[in-house]
Length: 344
Length: 286
Image (cartoon, rainbow over all chains, first blue to last red; front, side):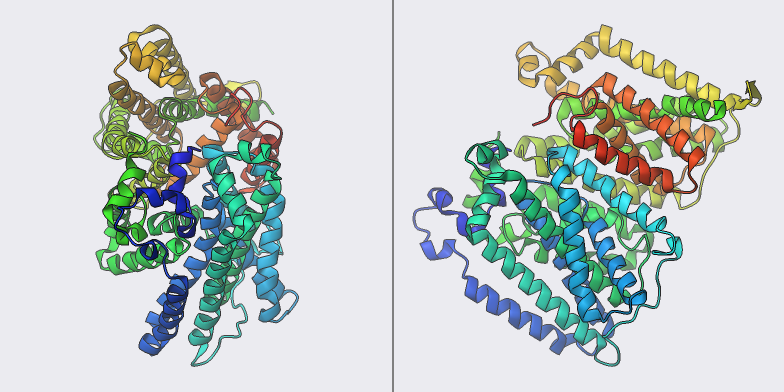
Protein backbone atom coordinates (compact mmCIF):
# COMPACT_ATOMS: atom_id res chain seq x y z
CA UNK A 1 0.00 0.00 0.00
CA UNK A 2 1.23 3.45 -0.83
CA UNK A 3 0.74 5.86 2.02
CA UNK A 4 0.07 8.90 -0.22
CA UNK A 5 -2.91 7.15 -1.74
CA UNK A 6 -4.24 5.85 1.48
CA UNK A 7 -5.86 9.15 2.31
CA UNK A 8 -8.61 8.45 -0.17
CA UNK A 9 -10.00 5.63 1.90
CA UNK A 10 -9.80 7.43 5.17
CA UNK A 11 -12.58 8.64 7.34
CA UNK A 12 -13.69 12.21 6.90
CA UNK A 13 -12.85 12.86 10.53
CA UNK A 14 -9.29 11.72 10.17
CA UNK A 15 -8.48 14.33 7.59
CA UNK A 16 -6.54 16.78 9.74
CA UNK A 17 -3.21 16.11 7.99
CA UNK A 18 -4.87 16.84 4.69
CA UNK A 19 -6.12 20.18 5.86
CA UNK A 20 -3.01 21.72 4.36
CA UNK A 21 -4.29 20.78 0.94
CA UNK A 22 -7.38 22.92 1.47
CA UNK A 23 -7.56 26.41 0.12
CA UNK A 24 -6.71 28.77 2.98
CA UNK A 25 -10.10 30.43 2.94
CA UNK A 26 -11.96 27.20 3.66
CA UNK A 27 -13.39 27.38 7.13
CA UNK A 28 -12.61 24.47 9.45
CA UNK A 29 -16.32 23.79 9.79
CA UNK A 30 -16.63 22.94 6.13
CA UNK A 31 -14.06 20.26 6.50
CA UNK A 32 -15.95 18.24 9.07
CA UNK A 33 -19.32 17.03 7.96
CA UNK A 34 -21.86 17.70 10.66
CA UNK A 35 -22.32 14.21 12.04
CA UNK A 36 -25.37 15.05 14.09
CA UNK A 37 -26.96 16.76 11.11
CA UNK A 38 -26.20 13.89 8.78
CA UNK A 39 -27.55 11.41 11.33
CA UNK A 40 -30.80 13.30 11.89
CA UNK A 41 -31.14 13.75 8.14
CA UNK A 42 -30.74 10.02 7.54
CA UNK A 43 -33.30 9.12 10.16
CA UNK A 44 -35.72 11.65 8.67
CA UNK A 45 -35.24 10.21 5.19
CA UNK A 46 -35.67 6.69 6.56
CA UNK A 47 -38.98 7.72 8.14
CA UNK A 48 -40.13 9.75 5.16
CA UNK A 49 -39.57 6.97 2.63
CA UNK A 50 -42.45 4.73 3.77
CA UNK A 51 -44.69 7.77 4.30
CA UNK A 52 -44.16 8.76 0.68
CA UNK A 53 -44.13 5.40 -1.06
CA UNK A 54 -45.62 3.07 1.56
CA UNK A 55 -48.71 2.47 -0.55
CA UNK A 56 -46.82 0.96 -3.43
CA UNK A 57 -45.51 -2.47 -2.57
CA UNK A 58 -43.18 -2.34 -5.58
CA UNK A 59 -41.58 0.87 -4.33
CA UNK A 60 -41.37 -0.56 -0.81
CA UNK A 61 -39.66 -3.68 -2.10
CA UNK A 62 -37.13 -1.48 -3.90
CA UNK A 63 -36.51 0.42 -0.68
CA UNK A 64 -35.99 -2.85 1.23
CA UNK A 65 -33.62 -4.08 -1.48
CA UNK A 66 -31.54 -0.92 -1.35
CA UNK A 67 -31.42 -0.96 2.46
CA UNK A 68 -30.32 -4.59 2.64
CA UNK A 69 -27.77 -4.20 -0.15
CA UNK A 70 -26.36 -1.18 1.66
CA UNK A 71 -26.20 -3.15 4.92
CA UNK A 72 -24.26 -5.97 3.27
CA UNK A 73 -22.01 -3.56 1.38
CA UNK A 74 -21.20 -1.62 4.56
CA UNK A 75 -19.42 -4.75 5.74
CA UNK A 76 -17.32 -4.80 2.60
CA UNK A 77 -16.51 -1.16 3.22
CA UNK A 78 -14.84 -2.16 6.49
CA UNK A 79 -12.54 -4.60 4.70
CA UNK A 80 -11.67 -1.85 2.23
CA UNK A 81 -10.79 0.26 5.27
CA UNK A 82 -8.13 -2.28 6.30
CA UNK A 83 -6.78 -2.34 2.77
CA UNK A 84 -8.28 -5.55 1.45
CA UNK A 85 -10.50 -6.01 -1.56
CA UNK A 86 -13.03 -8.56 -0.40
CA UNK A 87 -15.08 -10.46 -2.98
CA UNK A 88 -16.39 -13.05 -0.53
CA UNK A 89 -19.34 -11.11 0.85
CA UNK A 90 -21.88 -12.86 -1.39
CA UNK A 91 -20.73 -16.13 0.15
CA UNK A 92 -21.34 -14.86 3.68
CA UNK A 93 -24.72 -13.39 2.74
CA UNK A 94 -25.55 -16.84 1.37
CA UNK A 95 -24.36 -18.39 4.63
CA UNK A 96 -26.59 -16.03 6.63
CA UNK A 97 -29.55 -16.82 4.38
CA UNK A 98 -29.06 -20.56 4.75
CA UNK A 99 -28.52 -20.30 8.51
CA UNK A 100 -31.85 -18.49 8.71
CA UNK A 101 -33.59 -21.04 6.51
CA UNK A 102 -32.22 -24.06 8.38
CA UNK A 103 -32.78 -22.63 11.85
CA UNK A 104 -36.34 -21.64 10.96
CA UNK A 105 -37.43 -24.80 9.18
CA UNK A 106 -35.43 -27.47 10.97
CA UNK A 107 -35.34 -26.13 14.50
CA UNK A 108 -38.47 -23.99 14.28
CA UNK A 109 -36.76 -21.11 16.07
CA UNK A 110 -38.50 -17.72 16.02
CA UNK A 111 -37.12 -15.19 13.54
CA UNK A 112 -36.10 -12.73 16.24
CA UNK A 113 -33.68 -15.32 17.55
CA UNK A 114 -32.67 -16.55 14.11
CA UNK A 115 -31.66 -13.11 12.82
CA UNK A 116 -28.92 -12.44 15.41
CA UNK A 117 -27.83 -16.09 15.26
CA UNK A 118 -27.38 -15.80 11.48
CA UNK A 119 -25.29 -12.68 11.88
CA UNK A 120 -23.22 -14.25 14.65
CA UNK A 121 -22.80 -17.49 12.74
CA UNK A 122 -21.58 -15.69 9.64
CA UNK A 123 -19.20 -13.59 11.76
CA UNK A 124 -17.84 -16.70 13.47
CA UNK A 125 -17.25 -18.53 10.21
CA UNK A 126 -15.75 -15.31 8.86
CA UNK A 127 -13.32 -15.19 11.77
CA UNK A 128 -12.35 -18.85 11.32
CA UNK A 129 -11.75 -18.49 7.58
CA UNK A 130 -10.47 -14.94 7.79
CA UNK A 131 -7.69 -15.69 10.29
CA UNK A 132 -5.70 -17.76 7.76
CA UNK A 133 -6.68 -16.15 4.46
CA UNK A 134 -6.05 -12.59 5.65
CA UNK A 135 -2.37 -13.44 5.47
CA UNK A 136 -2.79 -13.06 1.73
CA UNK A 137 -2.64 -9.59 0.32
CA UNK A 138 -3.54 -7.61 -2.77
CA UNK A 139 -4.79 -9.54 -5.75
CA UNK A 140 -4.15 -12.87 -4.04
CA UNK A 141 -6.69 -12.01 -1.36
CA UNK A 142 -9.17 -10.83 -3.99
CA UNK A 143 -8.78 -13.92 -6.14
CA UNK A 144 -9.15 -16.22 -3.16
CA UNK A 145 -12.20 -14.42 -1.78
CA UNK A 146 -13.79 -14.61 -5.23
CA UNK A 147 -13.23 -18.36 -5.16
CA UNK A 148 -14.71 -18.41 -1.66
CA UNK A 149 -18.03 -17.07 -2.97
CA UNK A 150 -18.05 -19.85 -5.53
CA UNK A 151 -17.14 -22.37 -2.82
CA UNK A 152 -20.12 -21.19 -0.75
CA UNK A 153 -22.45 -21.75 -3.70
CA UNK A 154 -21.02 -25.23 -4.27
CA UNK A 155 -21.31 -26.03 -0.57
CA UNK A 156 -24.99 -25.04 -0.64
CA UNK A 157 -25.47 -27.11 -3.77
CA UNK A 158 -23.88 -30.19 -2.17
CA UNK A 159 -25.24 -29.76 1.34
CA UNK A 160 -27.49 -32.82 1.06
CA UNK A 161 -30.50 -32.85 3.37
CA UNK A 162 -29.39 -29.73 5.16
CA UNK A 163 -29.60 -27.39 2.14
CA UNK A 164 -31.66 -29.48 -0.29
CA UNK A 165 -29.25 -28.85 -3.16
CA UNK A 166 -30.39 -26.93 -6.21
CA UNK A 167 -34.05 -26.93 -5.18
CA UNK A 168 -33.17 -24.73 -2.20
CA UNK A 169 -35.41 -24.08 0.80
CA UNK A 170 -38.70 -22.43 -0.18
CA UNK A 171 -41.68 -21.23 1.89
CA UNK A 172 -39.69 -19.77 4.75
CA UNK A 173 -41.79 -18.56 7.66
CA UNK A 174 -41.65 -14.80 8.08
CA UNK A 175 -42.88 -12.56 10.86
CA UNK A 176 -43.57 -9.85 8.29
CA UNK A 177 -46.98 -10.87 7.03
CA UNK A 178 -50.13 -9.07 6.16
CA UNK A 179 -50.75 -5.58 4.93
CA UNK A 180 -47.89 -3.96 6.80
CA UNK A 181 -45.41 -6.76 6.17
CA UNK A 182 -43.11 -4.74 3.97
CA UNK A 183 -43.29 -1.83 6.38
CA UNK A 184 -42.12 -4.02 9.25
CA UNK A 185 -39.29 -5.53 7.24
CA UNK A 186 -38.27 -2.08 6.06
CA UNK A 187 -38.24 -0.79 9.63
CA UNK A 188 -36.02 -3.64 10.82
CA UNK A 189 -33.69 -3.28 7.83
CA UNK A 190 -33.34 0.47 8.16
CA UNK A 191 -32.73 0.20 11.89
CA UNK A 192 -29.99 -2.36 11.33
CA UNK A 193 -28.47 -0.34 8.49
CA UNK A 194 -28.39 2.94 10.41
CA UNK A 195 -27.19 1.14 13.53
CA UNK A 196 -24.48 -0.57 11.49
CA UNK A 197 -23.36 2.66 9.87
CA UNK A 198 -23.27 4.32 13.29
CA UNK A 199 -21.16 1.46 14.66
CA UNK A 200 -18.75 1.77 11.73
CA UNK A 201 -18.59 5.51 12.16
CA UNK A 202 -17.94 5.31 15.90
CA UNK A 203 -15.44 2.51 15.30
CA UNK A 204 -13.34 4.71 13.04
CA UNK A 205 -13.16 7.32 15.81
CA UNK A 206 -11.92 4.87 18.44
CA UNK A 207 -8.33 3.63 18.72
CA UNK A 208 -9.44 0.53 16.78
CA UNK A 209 -10.21 2.80 13.83
CA UNK A 210 -6.68 4.11 14.09
CA UNK A 211 -5.37 0.56 14.01
CA UNK A 212 -7.47 -0.16 10.92
CA UNK A 213 -6.00 2.88 9.17
CA UNK A 214 -2.54 1.71 10.14
CA UNK A 215 -3.30 -1.72 8.67
CA UNK A 216 -4.43 -0.13 5.47
CA UNK A 217 -1.29 1.92 5.11
CA UNK A 218 1.39 -0.52 6.14
CA UNK A 219 0.82 -3.80 7.91
CA UNK A 220 4.50 -4.45 8.46
CA UNK A 221 4.99 -1.09 10.11
CA UNK A 222 1.88 -1.60 12.24
CA UNK A 223 3.16 -5.00 13.29
CA UNK A 224 6.58 -3.60 14.15
CA UNK A 225 4.87 -1.09 16.45
CA UNK A 226 3.53 -4.00 18.44
CA UNK A 227 -0.01 -4.05 17.03
CA UNK A 228 -1.37 -7.61 16.92
CA UNK A 229 -2.11 -7.23 13.22
CA UNK A 230 -3.71 -10.63 12.68
CA UNK A 231 -6.19 -10.12 15.50
CA UNK A 232 -7.40 -6.74 14.27
CA UNK A 233 -7.73 -7.69 10.62
CA UNK A 234 -9.67 -10.80 11.63
CA UNK A 235 -11.91 -8.60 13.77
CA UNK A 236 -12.63 -6.33 10.79
CA UNK A 237 -13.27 -9.29 8.49
CA UNK A 238 -15.55 -11.01 11.01
CA UNK A 239 -17.56 -7.80 11.45
CA UNK A 240 -17.84 -7.56 7.68
CA UNK A 241 -19.10 -11.14 7.45
CA UNK A 242 -21.55 -10.45 10.29
CA UNK A 243 -23.08 -7.60 8.24
CA UNK A 244 -23.27 -10.02 5.32
CA UNK A 245 -24.97 -12.65 7.47
CA UNK A 246 -27.57 -10.21 8.81
CA UNK A 247 -28.32 -8.90 5.33
CA UNK A 248 -28.54 -12.40 3.91
CA UNK A 249 -30.87 -13.47 6.71
CA UNK A 250 -33.22 -10.54 6.06
CA UNK A 251 -33.10 -11.20 2.32
CA UNK A 252 -34.09 -14.82 3.00
CA UNK A 253 -37.26 -13.82 4.87
CA UNK A 254 -37.91 -11.00 2.40
CA UNK A 255 -37.95 -13.44 -0.53
CA UNK A 256 -39.15 -16.29 1.74
CA UNK A 257 -36.76 -18.69 0.03
CA UNK A 258 -33.08 -19.38 -0.45
CA UNK A 259 -31.25 -21.12 -3.29
CA UNK A 260 -27.55 -21.77 -3.97
CA UNK A 261 -27.77 -19.02 -6.58
CA UNK A 262 -29.37 -16.48 -4.21
CA UNK A 263 -25.96 -14.82 -3.84
CA UNK A 264 -23.33 -15.44 -6.48
CA UNK A 265 -19.99 -14.04 -7.59
CA UNK A 266 -21.88 -11.28 -9.39
CA UNK A 267 -23.42 -10.20 -6.09
CA UNK A 268 -20.05 -10.26 -4.36
CA UNK A 269 -18.59 -8.01 -7.03
CA UNK A 270 -21.63 -5.75 -6.87
CA UNK A 271 -21.25 -5.21 -3.11
CA UNK A 272 -17.68 -4.22 -3.72
CA UNK A 273 -18.60 -1.91 -6.59
CA UNK A 274 -21.33 -0.23 -4.48
CA UNK A 275 -18.66 0.68 -1.93
CA UNK A 276 -16.28 1.91 -4.57
CA UNK A 277 -18.77 3.99 -6.53
CA UNK A 278 -20.27 5.45 -3.40
CA UNK A 279 -16.86 6.38 -2.11
CA UNK A 280 -14.36 4.42 -0.07
CA UNK A 281 -13.50 7.51 1.95
CA UNK A 282 -16.87 7.89 3.64
CA UNK A 283 -18.78 5.56 5.86
CA UNK A 284 -21.92 6.44 3.89
CA UNK A 285 -20.28 5.40 0.61
CA UNK A 286 -21.88 1.94 0.45
CA UNK A 287 -25.33 3.44 1.14
CA UNK A 288 -24.97 6.01 -1.63
CA UNK A 289 -23.46 3.45 -4.00
CA UNK A 290 -26.21 0.88 -3.39
CA UNK A 291 -28.89 3.51 -3.83
CA UNK A 292 -27.41 4.88 -7.05
CA UNK A 293 -26.42 1.62 -8.69
CA UNK A 294 -29.40 -0.51 -7.69
CA UNK A 295 -31.96 2.12 -8.64
CA UNK A 296 -29.94 2.86 -11.78
CA UNK A 297 -30.09 -0.79 -12.74
CA UNK A 298 -33.86 -0.89 -12.12
CA UNK A 299 -34.33 2.28 -14.15
CA UNK A 300 -32.69 0.60 -17.13
CA UNK A 301 -35.06 -2.37 -17.01
CA UNK A 302 -36.92 -1.04 -20.04
CA UNK A 303 -33.89 -1.88 -22.16
CA UNK A 304 -34.50 -5.61 -21.91
CA UNK A 305 -31.48 -7.63 -23.00
CA UNK A 306 -29.32 -4.52 -23.11
CA UNK A 307 -30.03 -3.63 -19.48
CA UNK A 308 -26.91 -5.12 -17.93
CA UNK A 309 -24.74 -4.09 -20.85
CA UNK A 310 -25.66 -0.42 -20.57
CA UNK A 311 -25.48 -0.66 -16.78
CA UNK A 312 -21.95 -2.09 -16.89
CA UNK A 313 -20.86 0.53 -19.42
CA UNK A 314 -22.29 3.38 -17.30
CA UNK A 315 -20.63 1.93 -14.21
CA UNK A 316 -17.22 1.82 -15.91
CA UNK A 317 -17.75 5.37 -17.13
CA UNK A 318 -18.55 6.44 -13.56
CA UNK A 319 -15.39 4.73 -12.32
CA UNK A 320 -13.29 6.59 -14.86
CA UNK A 321 -14.88 9.98 -14.22
CA UNK A 322 -15.26 9.71 -10.44
CA UNK A 323 -12.36 7.61 -9.18
CA UNK A 324 -13.15 8.65 -5.62
CA UNK A 325 -16.82 7.76 -5.72
CA UNK A 326 -20.10 9.61 -5.96
CA UNK A 327 -19.66 11.22 -2.55
CA UNK A 328 -16.56 13.03 -3.78
CA UNK A 329 -18.86 15.11 -5.97
CA UNK A 330 -19.76 17.51 -3.18
CA UNK A 331 -16.13 18.16 -2.28
CA UNK A 332 -14.46 21.16 -3.87
CA UNK A 333 -12.41 20.26 -6.91
CA UNK A 334 -9.15 21.49 -5.54
CA UNK A 335 -9.35 18.91 -2.78
CA UNK A 336 -9.46 16.05 -5.21
CA UNK A 337 -6.68 17.19 -7.42
CA UNK A 338 -3.66 16.39 -5.21
CA UNK A 339 -5.00 12.93 -4.43
CA UNK A 340 -5.21 12.09 -8.10
CA UNK A 341 -1.85 13.48 -9.05
CA UNK A 342 0.02 11.91 -6.18
CA UNK A 343 1.21 9.26 -8.63
CA UNK A 344 1.92 10.78 -11.98
CA UNK B 1 -7.55 -45.07 -14.19
CA UNK B 2 -5.72 -44.69 -17.52
CA UNK B 3 -8.78 -42.82 -18.76
CA UNK B 4 -8.66 -40.44 -15.80
CA UNK B 5 -4.98 -39.67 -16.26
CA UNK B 6 -5.47 -39.25 -20.00
CA UNK B 7 -8.33 -36.82 -19.39
CA UNK B 8 -6.15 -34.84 -17.01
CA UNK B 9 -3.33 -34.68 -19.52
CA UNK B 10 -5.59 -33.53 -22.37
CA UNK B 11 -7.18 -30.89 -20.14
CA UNK B 12 -3.81 -29.54 -19.00
CA UNK B 13 -3.01 -28.41 -22.56
CA UNK B 14 -5.81 -25.82 -22.84
CA UNK B 15 -5.57 -24.89 -19.17
CA UNK B 16 -1.90 -24.00 -19.66
CA UNK B 17 -2.86 -21.47 -22.35
CA UNK B 18 -5.39 -19.82 -20.03
CA UNK B 19 -3.00 -19.64 -17.09
CA UNK B 20 -0.14 -18.33 -19.24
CA UNK B 21 -2.27 -15.49 -20.56
CA UNK B 22 -3.42 -14.45 -17.09
CA UNK B 23 0.04 -14.64 -15.59
CA UNK B 24 1.55 -12.67 -18.47
CA UNK B 25 -0.84 -9.77 -17.95
CA UNK B 26 -0.26 -9.97 -14.22
CA UNK B 27 3.52 -9.93 -14.54
CA UNK B 28 3.57 -7.03 -16.99
CA UNK B 29 1.04 -4.67 -15.52
CA UNK B 30 0.31 -5.99 -12.03
CA UNK B 31 -3.32 -6.24 -13.11
CA UNK B 32 -5.44 -9.27 -12.37
CA UNK B 33 -7.43 -9.57 -15.52
CA UNK B 34 -10.82 -10.52 -14.10
CA UNK B 35 -12.19 -10.56 -17.63
CA UNK B 36 -9.86 -13.39 -18.60
CA UNK B 37 -12.59 -16.04 -18.51
CA UNK B 38 -14.82 -13.76 -20.58
CA UNK B 39 -12.09 -13.34 -23.21
CA UNK B 40 -11.88 -17.11 -23.31
CA UNK B 41 -15.63 -17.36 -23.90
CA UNK B 42 -15.38 -14.77 -26.68
CA UNK B 43 -12.60 -16.85 -28.26
CA UNK B 44 -14.87 -19.88 -28.15
CA UNK B 45 -17.69 -18.02 -29.85
CA UNK B 46 -15.44 -16.57 -32.54
CA UNK B 47 -14.44 -20.10 -33.49
CA UNK B 48 -18.06 -21.19 -33.29
CA UNK B 49 -19.08 -18.58 -35.84
CA UNK B 50 -16.07 -18.87 -38.17
CA UNK B 51 -15.76 -22.65 -38.15
CA UNK B 52 -19.25 -23.78 -37.17
CA UNK B 53 -21.41 -21.25 -39.03
CA UNK B 54 -19.27 -19.97 -41.93
CA UNK B 55 -17.60 -23.38 -42.45
CA UNK B 56 -14.12 -21.91 -42.83
CA UNK B 57 -11.14 -24.13 -41.92
CA UNK B 58 -10.41 -24.68 -38.23
CA UNK B 59 -6.94 -23.02 -38.26
CA UNK B 60 -8.49 -19.84 -39.68
CA UNK B 61 -11.13 -19.97 -36.95
CA UNK B 62 -8.42 -20.28 -34.30
CA UNK B 63 -6.58 -17.35 -35.82
CA UNK B 64 -9.83 -15.40 -35.74
CA UNK B 65 -10.31 -16.26 -32.05
CA UNK B 66 -6.77 -15.15 -31.24
CA UNK B 67 -7.07 -11.88 -33.17
CA UNK B 68 -10.56 -11.13 -31.89
CA UNK B 69 -9.58 -11.66 -28.26
CA UNK B 70 -6.34 -9.72 -28.79
CA UNK B 71 -8.34 -6.82 -30.19
CA UNK B 72 -10.63 -6.86 -27.16
CA UNK B 73 -7.52 -6.94 -24.98
CA UNK B 74 -6.06 -3.92 -26.75
CA UNK B 75 -9.32 -2.00 -26.33
CA UNK B 76 -9.42 -2.86 -22.61
CA UNK B 77 -5.81 -1.88 -22.09
CA UNK B 78 -5.79 1.33 -24.15
CA UNK B 79 -9.14 2.75 -23.17
CA UNK B 80 -9.66 1.47 -19.63
CA UNK B 81 -6.54 0.35 -17.83
CA UNK B 82 -3.98 2.73 -19.27
CA UNK B 83 -5.86 5.97 -18.44
CA UNK B 84 -6.66 4.74 -14.94
CA UNK B 85 -3.13 3.46 -14.29
CA UNK B 86 -1.78 6.82 -15.37
CA UNK B 87 -4.06 8.71 -13.04
CA UNK B 88 -3.80 6.63 -9.90
CA UNK B 89 -1.62 3.77 -8.83
CA UNK B 90 -4.15 2.72 -6.23
CA UNK B 91 -4.55 -1.00 -6.33
CA UNK B 92 -8.30 -0.73 -5.83
CA UNK B 93 -8.86 1.34 -8.95
CA UNK B 94 -7.38 -1.11 -11.44
CA UNK B 95 -8.81 -4.15 -9.69
CA UNK B 96 -12.32 -2.73 -9.60
CA UNK B 97 -11.97 -1.66 -13.19
CA UNK B 98 -10.96 -5.21 -14.08
CA UNK B 99 -14.04 -6.49 -12.29
CA UNK B 100 -16.20 -3.92 -14.09
CA UNK B 101 -14.77 -4.93 -17.46
CA UNK B 102 -15.59 -8.57 -16.66
CA UNK B 103 -19.22 -7.58 -15.98
CA UNK B 104 -19.28 -5.59 -19.22
CA UNK B 105 -17.92 -8.45 -21.34
CA UNK B 106 -20.25 -10.88 -19.60
CA UNK B 107 -23.33 -8.90 -20.55
CA UNK B 108 -21.92 -8.19 -24.00
CA UNK B 109 -21.48 -11.94 -24.55
CA UNK B 110 -25.05 -12.55 -23.45
CA UNK B 111 -26.40 -9.90 -25.83
CA UNK B 112 -24.26 -11.04 -28.77
CA UNK B 113 -24.32 -14.80 -28.39
CA UNK B 114 -27.53 -15.56 -26.51
CA UNK B 115 -28.02 -18.09 -23.74
CA UNK B 116 -27.69 -21.30 -25.74
CA UNK B 117 -24.95 -23.90 -25.33
CA UNK B 118 -22.92 -23.86 -28.53
CA UNK B 119 -20.76 -26.59 -30.00
CA UNK B 120 -19.14 -27.26 -33.36
CA UNK B 121 -18.99 -30.40 -35.51
CA UNK B 122 -15.94 -32.61 -35.07
CA UNK B 123 -12.78 -31.04 -36.40
CA UNK B 124 -11.28 -34.46 -36.98
CA UNK B 125 -13.15 -37.71 -36.59
CA UNK B 126 -11.86 -40.97 -35.23
CA UNK B 127 -11.03 -42.39 -31.86
CA UNK B 128 -7.91 -43.99 -30.46
CA UNK B 129 -7.55 -46.76 -27.90
CA UNK B 130 -4.83 -46.30 -25.31
CA UNK B 131 -4.67 -49.40 -23.13
CA UNK B 132 -8.18 -49.66 -21.70
CA UNK B 133 -8.95 -45.99 -22.30
CA UNK B 134 -10.48 -44.13 -25.24
CA UNK B 135 -9.12 -40.97 -26.75
CA UNK B 136 -11.15 -39.07 -29.36
CA UNK B 137 -8.91 -37.73 -32.12
CA UNK B 138 -10.26 -34.18 -31.69
CA UNK B 139 -9.09 -34.06 -28.09
CA UNK B 140 -5.64 -35.24 -29.13
CA UNK B 141 -5.58 -32.55 -31.82
CA UNK B 142 -6.57 -29.88 -29.33
CA UNK B 143 -3.90 -31.06 -26.91
CA UNK B 144 -1.22 -31.11 -29.64
CA UNK B 145 -2.16 -27.60 -30.81
CA UNK B 146 -2.15 -26.32 -27.23
CA UNK B 147 1.28 -27.80 -26.54
CA UNK B 148 2.56 -26.37 -29.83
CA UNK B 149 1.21 -22.91 -28.98
CA UNK B 150 2.68 -23.07 -25.47
CA UNK B 151 6.07 -23.98 -26.95
CA UNK B 152 5.78 -21.18 -29.49
CA UNK B 153 4.90 -18.72 -26.71
CA UNK B 154 7.87 -19.79 -24.59
CA UNK B 155 10.26 -19.55 -27.55
CA UNK B 156 8.84 -16.14 -28.41
CA UNK B 157 9.39 -14.88 -24.87
CA UNK B 158 12.88 -16.37 -24.70
CA UNK B 159 14.45 -15.58 -28.05
CA UNK B 160 12.75 -12.69 -29.83
CA UNK B 161 13.31 -9.01 -29.28
CA UNK B 162 9.72 -8.23 -28.19
CA UNK B 163 9.81 -11.28 -25.91
CA UNK B 164 12.96 -10.01 -24.26
CA UNK B 165 11.40 -6.58 -23.86
CA UNK B 166 8.32 -8.08 -22.21
CA UNK B 167 10.47 -10.07 -19.78
CA UNK B 168 12.47 -6.94 -18.99
CA UNK B 169 9.27 -5.03 -18.20
CA UNK B 170 8.06 -7.85 -15.98
CA UNK B 171 11.34 -7.79 -14.05
CA UNK B 172 11.64 -4.06 -13.61
CA UNK B 173 9.46 -1.59 -15.40
CA UNK B 174 11.62 1.44 -14.77
CA UNK B 175 14.91 -0.20 -15.62
CA UNK B 176 13.41 -1.52 -18.85
CA UNK B 177 12.21 1.96 -19.68
CA UNK B 178 15.70 3.36 -19.03
CA UNK B 179 17.14 0.84 -21.47
CA UNK B 180 14.96 2.27 -24.19
CA UNK B 181 12.09 -0.21 -24.07
CA UNK B 182 8.86 1.51 -25.07
CA UNK B 183 7.01 0.32 -21.99
CA UNK B 184 3.66 1.73 -23.03
CA UNK B 185 3.53 -0.01 -26.41
CA UNK B 186 4.95 -3.27 -25.12
CA UNK B 187 2.44 -3.32 -22.27
CA UNK B 188 -0.32 -3.12 -24.87
CA UNK B 189 1.36 -5.90 -26.83
CA UNK B 190 1.61 -8.02 -23.69
CA UNK B 191 -2.05 -7.46 -22.84
CA UNK B 192 -3.01 -8.38 -26.41
CA UNK B 193 -0.84 -11.49 -26.25
CA UNK B 194 -2.36 -12.58 -22.95
CA UNK B 195 -5.87 -12.01 -24.30
CA UNK B 196 -4.99 -13.88 -27.50
CA UNK B 197 -3.89 -16.88 -25.43
CA UNK B 198 -7.25 -16.85 -23.67
CA UNK B 199 -9.02 -16.57 -27.03
CA UNK B 200 -7.03 -19.48 -28.45
CA UNK B 201 -7.90 -21.59 -25.42
CA UNK B 202 -11.57 -20.77 -26.00
CA UNK B 203 -11.33 -21.65 -29.69
CA UNK B 204 -9.72 -24.96 -28.79
CA UNK B 205 -12.22 -25.67 -26.07
CA UNK B 206 -15.25 -25.42 -28.33
CA UNK B 207 -13.73 -28.15 -30.52
CA UNK B 208 -14.09 -30.61 -27.63
CA UNK B 209 -17.05 -29.38 -25.62
CA UNK B 210 -19.88 -26.87 -25.74
CA UNK B 211 -19.55 -23.25 -24.59
CA UNK B 212 -22.16 -20.82 -23.33
CA UNK B 213 -22.08 -17.09 -22.75
CA UNK B 214 -22.19 -17.43 -18.97
CA UNK B 215 -19.12 -19.65 -18.67
CA UNK B 216 -16.73 -16.73 -18.19
CA UNK B 217 -16.84 -16.41 -14.40
CA UNK B 218 -16.12 -20.07 -13.79
CA UNK B 219 -13.29 -19.95 -16.33
CA UNK B 220 -11.85 -16.93 -14.51
CA UNK B 221 -12.04 -18.77 -11.20
CA UNK B 222 -10.22 -21.70 -12.77
CA UNK B 223 -7.57 -19.37 -14.15
CA UNK B 224 -7.09 -17.74 -10.73
CA UNK B 225 -6.84 -21.15 -9.10
CA UNK B 226 -4.12 -22.25 -11.50
CA UNK B 227 -2.17 -19.04 -11.04
CA UNK B 228 -2.49 -19.19 -7.26
CA UNK B 229 -1.31 -22.80 -7.18
CA UNK B 230 1.70 -22.09 -9.37
CA UNK B 231 2.52 -18.57 -8.26
CA UNK B 232 1.36 -15.36 -9.93
CA UNK B 233 3.55 -13.79 -12.57
CA UNK B 234 5.78 -16.84 -13.01
CA UNK B 235 5.62 -18.65 -16.37
CA UNK B 236 6.73 -22.03 -15.05
CA UNK B 237 4.27 -21.61 -12.18
CA UNK B 238 1.39 -21.05 -14.60
CA UNK B 239 2.18 -24.28 -16.44
CA UNK B 240 2.57 -26.22 -13.21
CA UNK B 241 -0.67 -24.79 -11.81
CA UNK B 242 -2.53 -25.71 -15.00
CA UNK B 243 -1.27 -29.30 -14.87
CA UNK B 244 -2.11 -29.64 -11.17
CA UNK B 245 -5.65 -28.27 -11.64
CA UNK B 246 -6.29 -30.38 -14.76
CA UNK B 247 -5.34 -33.59 -12.98
CA UNK B 248 -7.15 -32.61 -9.79
CA UNK B 249 -10.27 -31.99 -11.87
CA UNK B 250 -9.99 -35.25 -13.81
CA UNK B 251 -9.46 -37.29 -10.65
CA UNK B 252 -12.12 -35.32 -8.78
CA UNK B 253 -14.79 -35.94 -11.41
CA UNK B 254 -13.86 -39.62 -11.36
CA UNK B 255 -14.26 -39.90 -7.58
CA UNK B 256 -17.13 -37.53 -6.81
CA UNK B 257 -20.45 -36.74 -8.46
CA UNK B 258 -21.76 -33.40 -9.71
CA UNK B 259 -20.16 -30.20 -8.57
CA UNK B 260 -18.53 -31.68 -5.47
CA UNK B 261 -15.01 -31.90 -6.99
CA UNK B 262 -14.79 -28.12 -7.37
CA UNK B 263 -15.85 -27.57 -3.79
CA UNK B 264 -12.98 -29.80 -2.69
CA UNK B 265 -10.55 -28.14 -5.10
CA UNK B 266 -11.41 -24.67 -3.78
CA UNK B 267 -11.21 -25.82 -0.16
CA UNK B 268 -7.93 -27.57 -0.93
CA UNK B 269 -6.66 -24.36 -2.50
CA UNK B 270 -7.41 -22.47 0.69
CA UNK B 271 -5.57 -25.00 2.84
CA UNK B 272 -2.68 -25.03 0.39
CA UNK B 273 -2.38 -21.24 0.50
CA UNK B 274 -2.12 -21.41 4.29
CA UNK B 275 1.18 -23.14 3.92
CA UNK B 276 2.38 -21.49 0.75
CA UNK B 277 0.68 -18.14 0.18
CA UNK B 278 2.91 -17.35 -2.79
CA UNK B 279 2.16 -20.57 -4.68
CA UNK B 280 4.56 -23.38 -5.49
CA UNK B 281 6.98 -21.40 -7.63
CA UNK B 282 5.97 -17.84 -6.80
CA UNK B 283 8.03 -15.13 -5.25
CA UNK B 284 7.15 -14.02 -1.78
CA UNK B 285 4.32 -11.54 -2.03
CA UNK B 286 4.09 -8.14 -0.33
